[in-house]
Structures are given as structure tokens and as C-alpha cells.
Picture 1 (cartoon, rainbow, N blue to C red):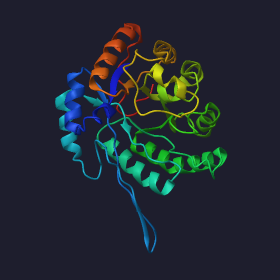
Picture 2 (cartoon, rainbow, N blue to C red):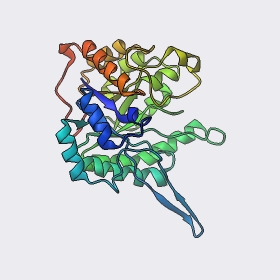
Picture 3 (tube, rainbow, N blue to C red):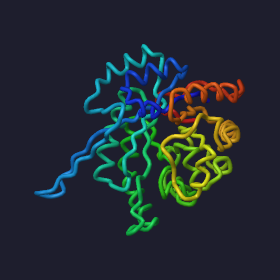
Picture 4 (tube, rainbow, N blue to C red):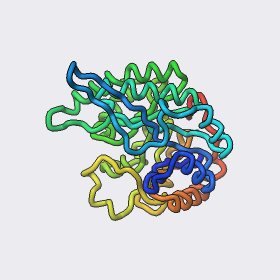
Length: 295
């Protein structure tokens, strides 16, 4: 296993991708996970058009020089662990073009994993069962494109379907291990009222990337009432059983990256120091394959 950093901690300071990369390298990380966004314009009819907008992202495949990005990463001594490409998989006309562009970009940059969650479920008029059907329908072309490009696509635990173990289990049964991977977010799953360690004992073999997010005691009152949070505190400072998570992953021979999600670079540095002491030499493994990033 290896330590990586989700570049969400650059959001508060409004850092560019170049600045975030410099910070990650200085903090001693070997892997980074940027937020990658590709805009979509959808014509609904002759007088209505929908355009997506992202006020914060690190990379946009439509406006980023892939060769220059490769040079920047090489100079910083960094590799991509994954592209965080949150879309809404319940809106196929948006998610499919958006995520196929990101998958193409990931293949160009040898990024092994692209991930998204399902997006918010309109529970006031859509049942979870119906939402599951729409999610499965949307995933079919995305997963086919991911396999064709040699990139793993992973579902993140973050909304009403994916934080429910019963629906997550159905999804992993619907799509096989060569099709759909799991981006296991420890903080989101814990906040939703679940036990991350217990769940990993039966599903760690499907994990291709990990968001290692620790939840402060001040957020415990929200547990079971929310489906996730953007970032956590420094790993080791919160209430998630991080040693148990790492042990469960190690027992399943997980060979990927633990991508820290926290608020500040100071928390990121403390997280890395904590994980370096936690990851015993016997648990450390070679870096993930650029082709799959999977265990």
C-alpha cells in the first residue's frame, strides 16, 4: 500500500494544479488525485439548453495539454492514483459524455482509475430501486469505454445508494470485478452509519482505490443522517478505525493507494506521517500497475 493525497486540500486556498502538485511533492507524497471535470452542453429541445458548470477543478480534458501535464508530473516525481471525476450517474445524458472524456484523458496520462458517485437521488419522486436501475443503465456504456481504454472505473460511496450495503452489494453483483471497481471512502461510509472494517472484510477484493478520510468527534451527531462529507481531519485524529481499515485491506492483499482526504496541507503532512508508522514493511507493496491500479 502507498500514501497518496486527494487534492481537495488545495480548494480552500484556490490553488492551481501546478501549485497543488508542488505542495504534494513538498509534503512527501508519491501519488496525487486531482478533480477532473469536463463540461457538457445538452440541447433539450429547440429552445432549451443545459450546460454544466464547475467552479473548482484541477484539470479539464478539453483545455489541458496532456504532454505538458506529463512533464509536470515527471518533474515533481509524482504519479496519478486516480481521477476524481464526480458526475451524476443518474443523469446518463450528462454522465456518459462527461466520464468518457475523462476516461480518454486518463488513458493519455496513464492514470489507472477514474471514479464517480451516483449523485443525489431525488427521493421525493424516485424510489431507490428505480434509481438503482438508472444507475446500472448509465454504467453500462461507461464501463465498456473504460475497458476499451485500459482504465478502471470505480464507484465511490457517497450518496443514498452507494452508502447502503444492500444496494452496494447488488451493484457489485450486477457488474463483475473486471468491470466495476470500488473506491472505498472510509469517512462517507462511516458517517452513513456503517462499519467500514466489517464491510471491508467481505468486499475488500473489489477495492481498487481508497479515500482515507477520518471523521472528527464533532461530526458524530450527524452519523446515520448524512451520506458523506467532502473532507475530514488529519488521518489518525478522528473516530474512524483507520488501523482496522488498513489491516482489512492488507488481509485482502490490496496493492493500491490510500488517498488522504483532508482540509489543509498541514493535515495532509500529519496524515502521511501517521500512515508511514502504520504501514508496516510487510504491508507495503509495489506501486499499482499503470494499466489497472487494481490489487
